[in-house]
Image (cartoon, rainbow over all chains, first blue to last red; front, side, top):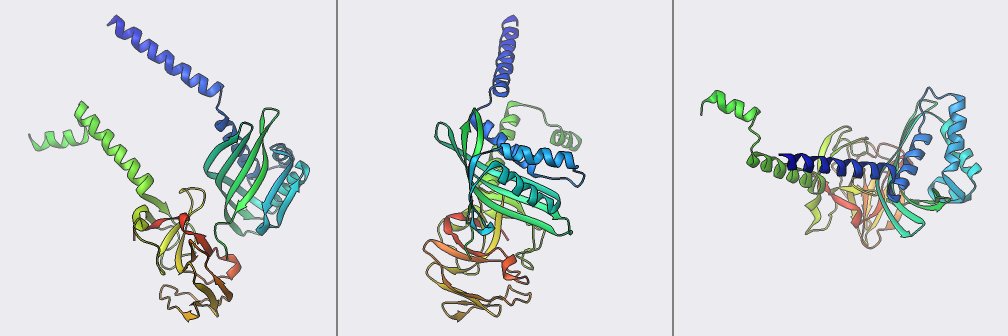
Length: 166
Length: 166
């Protein structure tokens, strides 16, 4: 009985240790996923958003990208290298057309071809309502390259994958 | 065993090792079956109306094309980065075929194709194009919208996840 008590205590300590280790020292994959979570949170918009939040979010969005960041989206007329300011301005301009916006990422496949580089393939879905009341629902497959700069994963390249070619 | 006891045993079974093993095996089977073989999905959008109405529920049967190739008129699920978000479309042409729309009518290799599933008016015009190797050409059944607003085109066969169960 006493042995069982020690055994259970030991198992409990190991479980707590594992949970703490995972929480306090997240893997690189989790750190990369967090960048997507932040991008989703900052691009998304609620109808109640005030001007201060808007400005803060625009600044925050820019900080997620490397300087410069390459965008490859020929169908959206977005191809080339962009600075953080340009990306922030573009995101702010796009957000201003919507009263409500919800960006979500699905099916993230993360690989690390090199130590400081992460390649992520994912599905991005943007659901929103424009200021004129039109409903928008756009889905794209993206291939993103993130680079670890100053111990932060930053978006270095985003390419829209063509799933259907007319 | 009395009926009363049987009913009680059914709703409140004894947690015997045998019962727990059975629960584990059923859960494992359900997880594998509904995640990898028969994926449930909800239709969002009107692209396949009236065949598959908006908000309908169906299952994607992954083994549909295990031993065969998608044929013309088959309805298929086309994946993006994974299986969380898919497009439900109809195959209208296969690799090597020339596909075009004239006044809303579909022509494959210069021959008009009967499409009884297209019930809504369509006035599309699309110049002839050849479907590339290892690809199929997919279109939705609802073409009662400007051609620019409809997601359709050529897609790689490896993106076809399967077909709807019904």
